[in-house]
Length: 148
Image 1: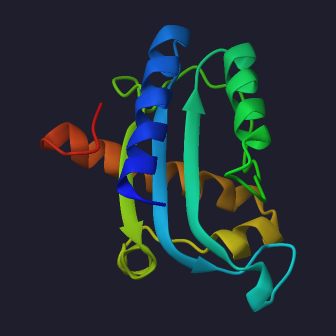
Image 2: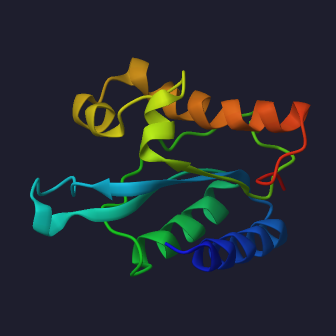
Image 3: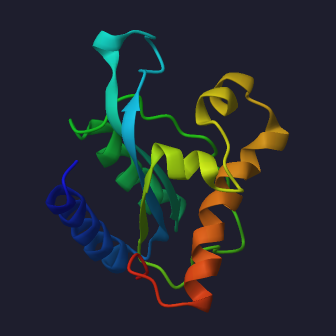
């Protein structure tokens, strides 16, 4: 995706989220990835999103259904859908970060989403939350371009 496309998504997300009491984080990983359903070059996907949405169950379900129907997305896979009494991204209508595939792998909190999805281990489910939360915590201690 281009910077302009990502900026449009981010602007629309922040506006929607502010109006509907949603907080969270959006991560875009640049690169070419094999489709989860098919492992061949013809099914390659350019770029990957990872997102946390926090808010009322009804509002989160509305936005998640919009995301699933958006033609720019494929293989939308929820990792976890559970109520929480805590907001982990309480001051971000939508935090945002772009990483290259190599930056993702070099990150100390890196996990391989393909392995996570395949394993289905409950112990591993908190890893995506902790990974995205690490950007939030860094953003709270310093001004960042992806904060809001």
